[in-house]
Length: 162
Image 1 (spheres, helix red, strand yellow):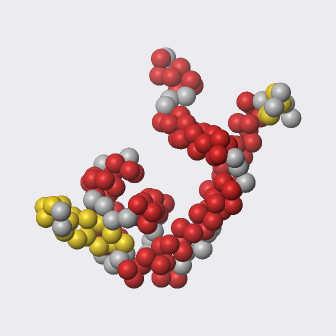
Image 2 (cartoon, rainbow, N blue to C red; image 1 turned 90 degrees about the horizontal axis):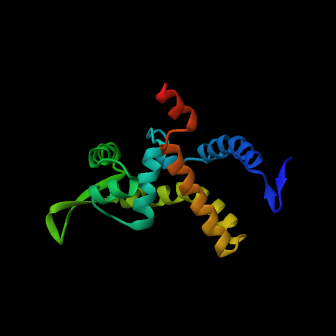
Image 3 (cartoon, rainbow, N blue to C red; image 1 turned 180 degrees about the vertical axis):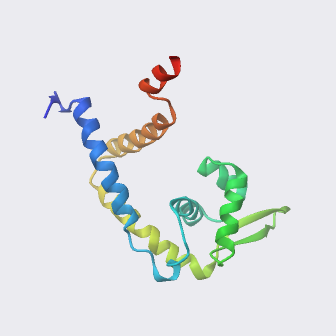
């Protein structure tokens, strides 16, 4: 293993992460879905939307779209998919009657909280073991990785230049 003064060299770190990420995703996908949500054909995109509603509370489609970084029409379709089986509800915003607020229905609040708890408890155990600066580094690295995935690689740029 190639190392630098205080950790793995860049190439070794990249290799380790490339091998680790599929295992992480695979394990996250195997988290048990509560019985009340089984058979609902929920996808990762739904989990992200439900997580925002669970942790941030009821909000509008436009606010959800901004948080998820997708178009409002995409969120509207997802809300429709989750409203049909009764997981989500749309209500008139009392502050602005023209606006609709999306919320998790009381019947599904418990099962959704239970579903999210698997990942949340794992992250809590990890983050408790880190100093605040280390937590900041982990979060910043994951955001930077997400951003880097959106940018073309050197190979893609070279192929486009040909």
